[in-house]
Image 1: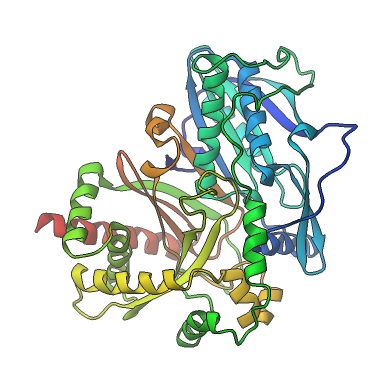
Image 2: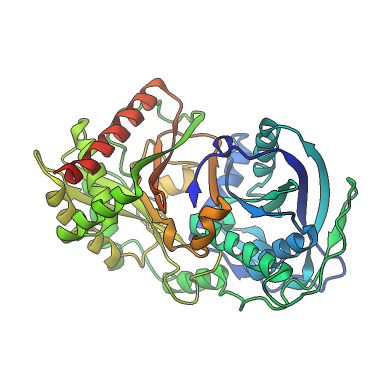
Amino acid sequence: MLQISVEDSEIGPGEAHRWHLVPLTGADGPAPRRMTGYNQAKHFTVAQYAQSVDDPIRSYVAASFELAGRVDLDALAAALLQLVRRHEVLRAVYQPLAGDLGCEVLTPDEVALKHVYGGPLETSEQVTRHLQEAFQEVDTLSWPLITMGAVVRPESTTVWFSCDHLVTDGLSTAIAINDVTTAYRNLTSVGPALPTAPAAPAAPAAVAVAVDATAGAARQPWSYLEFSRTQRRANRAMRADDARLDHWRAFRDRNGGLFPRFPLDLGVRPGQLYAPVASTERLLAAHQVEEFGTVCRDLGGRLSMGLLGSLALALRQLGGPAVYRGLMPFNERGRGVYAESMGWFINTLPIEFPVGPGAGLGDVLADAQDAYAQVRAHAEVHFVKAWKLLAPAEYATLRYWPYAVNFFSYIDCRRLPGADRHAAQQARMHVWVSGCNGILHWLHRTDDGLFVNTIHADTPQARDVNRALLDGFARVLTEPLRT
């Protein structure tokens, strides 16, 4: 699954269709109030405050993928409805509490889809504009938090959906693609025959799709909201002097704050957001990633830590510090009951290790590996909880990161649900933010190699730094392959 901006996706023209999630009338009412996740509570509160000062910050996590052949619109609608019915987090109606966030959940039978025919999109440029507008319709403060649609052609169909970050993360994107694809295949050719939805209209009139899309489906995944309740209860009694915060406290003291600064000057002004610049490029071919992974294993480390160590070396060569400090996301699903659940299952944790003068990959890999083990040992404390306890003033006032923050993310997309179909489906994830004050790199591995999706502030200096850093990073990665 490639992470790429929708502007670079080159999706062909076709007929536009939309499905809007709607609550069914006459329902008995939502279930009792549920607990939301740490990420969700902070994200919602930030959106509320930004709206109150007329400084909205918008973002989305979207996806698109291809269905070959002539599409069955009824089956596709049923598959999309099944996605929402399978995952509670998509059916939740979020309500602010005093300094927190709660939610009530509509049952699977209390939601339906309303189909709207959007007419022809005659050029790829029109498709891009259509998707840009549709993706941005999701709003943290408004329900629903997912929007879905398709661009239909006689020989193939591009299916898409967009979610607010409140209900999703990057891994959820692959889970959702796999859920929709599996349900569609079951409804059309592979699985047992299932009840079908009413025929989709051929005109702009809107109708509700309410079908038994859960029949014959896989077991219901465990809910992110249940995970959040368990996590919150485990940390309910935590105070600022809790020993579980020692790792965060020590990092804060050495770093001078909870947020590690991006170590190179990007030419951004404090407190200002800039238009985002997005790009995706391949850093290593597939065989080169294999060779680099072998080098890392021979040195006693993991591929992911070899990538982090190489990035630290590239920063050092451009004038970065002798100690790498950054934040890295951790997937909290594990391999158990939450493995295929949608939600914001991400903790963000600090990592630091030395990058001495003249250090090589072997030196930084060993230190990065040790640092990673330290981080994992303290992963039970969520970043938002640590932030609230250790920097309460910042927590209450910050609407976005205070400055350009050093951030490292890597995911092996070949291990995601449904990855064996990603290449044939042209599965893509699209991440967008309305404003940026730094530089973000998302490294991801596919069957075609190692790619980096970048979003950075639109300043001349940020453009130059990003280019120099990625070129230097590529040189560091390929050096051990040459020798």
